[in-house]
Amino acid sequence: MQVEVRGITKCFGAVRANDNISFTVPSSSIEGILGENGAGKSTLMKILSGFYSSDSGDIILDGEKVTIDDPADAIRQGIGMLHQDPLDFPPFKVIDDFILGKKGGLIPNRRAAIREFNELATRFDFSIDPESYVDTLTVGERQQLEILRLLWLGSRVLILDEPTTGISLPQKEKLFATLKKLASEGMTVLFVSHKLEDVEALCNRATVLRQGRLVGTVEPPFDTKVLVEMMFGKEIPQEPKTQLRMGTTVLHAKHVELEGIRIQIKNIDLRVRAGEVIGVAGMEGSGQILFLSACAGLAQPVKGSICLDEDEKDMTGKTYHEFRKKGVVYLPAARLEQALIPGLSLTEHFILSEGMKGLFIDRKKSEELAKSRISLFNIKGRPDSPVESLSGGNQQRALLALMRDPLKLILIEHPTRGLDVESTIYIWGKLKERCARGTAIVFISSDLHEILKYSDRVLVFFAGRVTPPLRASTLTVERLGRLIGGKDWDSIETEVSHA
Ligand SMILES: Nc1ncnc2c1ncn2[C@@H]1O[C@H](COP(=O)(O)OP(=O)(O)OP(=O)(O)O)[C@@H](O)[C@H]1O
Ligand SMILES: [Mg+2]
Image: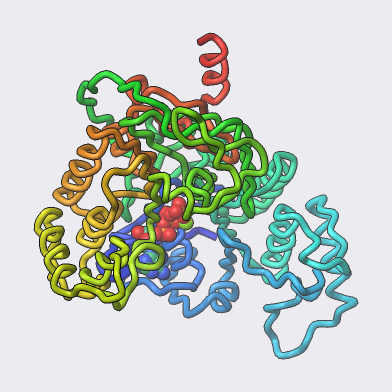
C-alpha cells in the first residue's frame, strides 16, 4: 500500500513536534525514518497509526485521503505499529496476546487461532510456543509475536519504531530478513531508527527529520557523511580551545561496569580533572544517565569502583548524600520532577538548599538571599514566585543559583535543553566560571554542537559500549554523529591501542 503524508503538523504546547511534513512511501519498500532525539519521528508514526491526531495535514493511502480515528481504526485500514516501548501484556499467554485486538464480535476460536499462529510463525521461521507466557520471551521474540499479530490483523503497512534497541544480533538479522521478505510480498515498511548501519543494511530509501521538519529523502548508495549532516546539521568551525587543564583528580571511575533495565555497560574508565568539562554523547537510553548516576552514588556499579579526589578515596556503594558532602552534585533533566519542588517559592528553595541553622527560619534574611541570587543569576521571577511558574530557562538559572559554592564536580543532564540562545550562553558562562575556579563538569547532551563547543573531552555511548575519552579538539560533528550511529568503533580501538 502506498502511504503519503501531506503537510502534517502537530504541536505539543509550544513544541512543534511535526512541522508541515510531506512525503510518499511506495508499496513493496522499506523506508528508513532517521533523525536525532526529539526530531519528531515517533510523533509522526503515532499520527499514522492513530495514536495521535494531527493538528493539520492529510494521510493518503493508495491515493485516497483517509481519516484515522484510533489505533484500531488504523489496523482496519491496514496500518500496524510496533512501538518503541512494547505494548504487550506480559501476564498473558502468547496465544491470548495474539488474539487480543481481533475485532468482529466473536471471540476467535482458540484452536483455529493457534493453527494460524503456527502457520504464520513457520512462514517466517520464528519458533515461539503459543502456549508459553509472554514474560518468558526475549525482547526479540516479543517483537516477532507483535509482527505476527499485526500481520494476522491484516496490516499492509508496518511501522517499527527503533526496533533494534535491546535485541541480539541474530535476532536483528532475523528481523531484517523478515522485513525484506514482507516488502517483497507487497508490504510497506516504515523503519524508524537512528542507527545508520541498520538503515543502510535494510532500507530502500531514507527520510530524515530534524527539529520537527523534513530535511530530505535520500536513496542508496547511502553516503554516511550526507546522512549525518542531514540529521545533526552542518559543521560549524570550532573556536580554538585553551590548553587542556591538567588539574588534580576529582573523580576516577575505574573499570566500571553497570547494569540497567535494558542495558549493560562494561569497562568505563575515566579520570576527571579539576576544571575540565567532559561531554557525554549518545542517543538517549544508551546508558549515559546510568553512568552519571553512578558517579554521584545514585546508582551502584556491578563491578569496578568510583573514587573521589587526588587520594582516590573509594566511594563505591556510598549514597548520594555522602557524595554531596564531598562536593558532588547531580542536576537531572527533569527539573520540576526531580530537582525543584513545585509549590515552593524561590525563597523557600534557598532556605532548603542553604540548610539554614537554628530553630526558626529567618524569613527576612532568606528573602534577602533570594533577592541577591535572583539578581546575580538574572532570574526572571520574584522571591515569592513558585518555581513551576518560571519558564524553563529561568528554572535552569534557579537550579544553578541553588548550587553550593565551591563544588568539586557537577554532573548535569542536558544543561540547556529547551532554552533559547541567550539563556544557553548565560548558563554556560556561569558553568565555565565555576570551572575556572576548579570545578569539573560532566554533562550529557544530545546537541552535538554543544558537546563540541564546551567539552575538553568527550565520551560516546552506543548500545552498551563507551569510547575512551576523546579530545574534543580532534572531533567534528560528522565523526561524533557516526560514532553515535554506531559507525567507526573499530578505528577507535586501534587508535587507542596505538596511543
Ligand atoms: N506526548 C507529548 N507531550 C508533549 N511533548 C511531546 C509529546 N510527545 C513528543 N513530544 C515532544 O515532541 C518532540 C518530538 O518528539 P518525538 O518523540 O516525536 O521525537 P523522536 O524523533 O521520536 O525522538 P527519539 O529519538 O528520542 O525517540 C520532542 O520535543 C518531544 O519532547
Ligand atoms: Mg521516538
